[in-house]
Image (cartoon, rainbow, N blue to C red; front, side):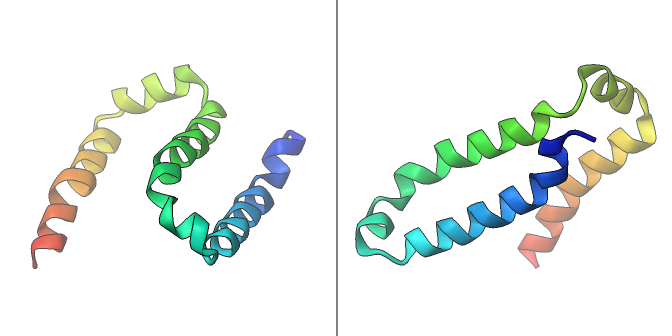
Length: 83
């Protein structure tokens, strides 16, 4: 486990605390919409950067994983949100 992986939870927690703190200021709350997408994209990129491509290919070959993922993401959430 690399140092980054060991500190990943602390980094995310710190980012959340900093984001909440900055969001309390009037200037940041007015322009928050322009910051959310780029920062969320960067966070997801860093998160998925740690996953080897071969493992992703192997995971999608696992049909039970793929079907469960599709069911939860596209069907279950729509059912849950419409109720």
